[in-house]
Length: 420
Image 1 (cartoon, rainbow, N blue to C red):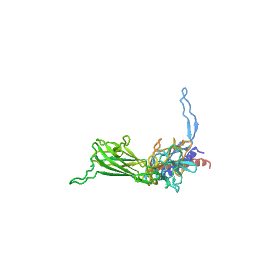
Image 2 (cartoon, helix red, strand yellow):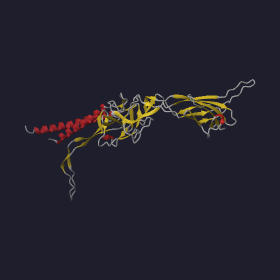
Image 3 (spheres, rainbow, N blue to C red):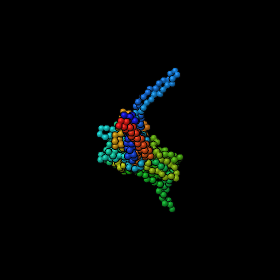
Image 4 (cartoon, rainbow, N blue to C red):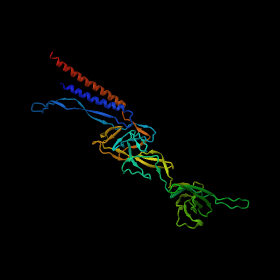
């Protein structure tokens, strides 16, 4: 039989494969996280008709004469170029901006995916659309995440609690006006002028999260040098204290003393009240400004999880009913030495192969892994203009090879017709 006949058949098969790959790319033009594939051809073995000869005295060398035996598919390579982003505003949608894969598990097998369209199941677990569990690291009670620990399914049940913590320190900041009036007694034809009084409060918490109010009352006191204020403190549970707060001539806090001006030990800028250290170190005593206010305290009441947001490093920041935010987990990303060596497992998932290398798991934004964006999805990276061009190339290649077969058939027909 003619060699051209079998070469044409191999061409039909190869271009049919190219059509299959191109058709699959076009079919997945709107598949989130899909990566297109390209087909590469190479020629098969060639039949040697005459071997080459070396040059000799008076005779030139000759080249070998070979006839090719067709074409075959050398490989189908996945293109991991970044796809465009689509804003969805869904908190459970995540997009990898750069290299890397989400790590998920189905049964006992681990898979990897670029499709970040996730949801919660009835147990509060973060899952893909086909039920695969998204892997990451859970945060501890204090909101810390150990990215060197083992992976586990991310779970954010609605009953997630932020525990209460006792207040041990409260801070006040701002300015007590040095030019405030210290008050004047009533006199002939003159009414009494009361001293300037400022009230400030801050809520603090016990171990169970019960709140109580610490109240500070500042009363201006006459002073020969600098500025002086009387301070009355209480926490609503019986704890109370009386202090003198003094500032030097440049408006800097010099000391907090016990009642009557008796030294309360060494110069200090804080005092204890019902187990809470009240820090006044940030107070100043300049004239013309009244800005003293409660700044912060380190306790909190218990809170339940209301919502969460995604940070670029994959940290899931929970918003709790007590008004605070705290990390509740972190999404893990995997990278590979050769991502094109991954095997497609269906459902937009990949599994490792002997040529992909082992998964290197870590936090987003580290080790060459991309950053994460919440409320967005990575769309397919299929380029329709390129795919339709490939469709034309594959169609014409198929037609040309089919013409080789029909031409070879005509030659065989002529050969058969030699005997009539």
